[in-house]
Image 1 (cartoon, helix red, strand yellow):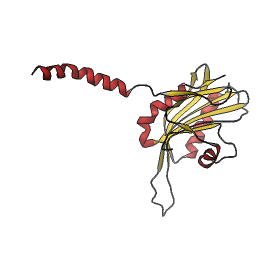
Image 2 (cartoon, helix red, strand yellow):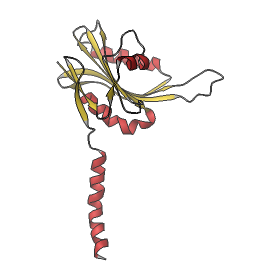
Image 3 (cartoon, helix red, strand yellow):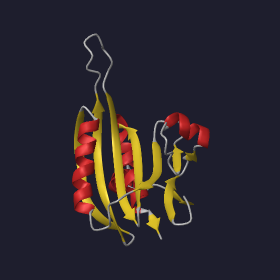
Image 4 (tube, helix red, strand yellow):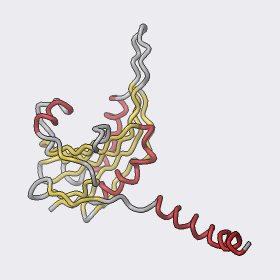
Length: 188
């Protein structure tokens, strides 16, 4: 009888500890992307080699770095490209990139869209779930849904883009990690 009553007294404490463990910040490893950019990369993510980047992200301008989880279903990438915008144009950039994202996908559900200061630098932040549906008549393919968090910043004449992408059905698992990664960005 005493064992049962002790268990019931400790049960709320056990529930509290398990609840707190569920909200523990993801473990990140500080990683230098280049001389001026460092970011926390999730434990277990590996940098893709150049040929892996070329296959997964075919583009004339390859990303500076791409990191994938062991299954290859979740990616974090950093890309840079020349830009004529200045660091005074963030409100305009927010509108332009939001509209661009809406045009790129069949459906977009925005979870966040704002300008944030992270480690003394301003970023345009867009967090969303995108859907691409195959609209051909004879197609019966299921839509592709992805959770994405994208941050844009201007440095001199360069636009730097940080992107975290995961399957939409894994959003609950990856959203805290994406947010922690984006909060860890440091640019000199």
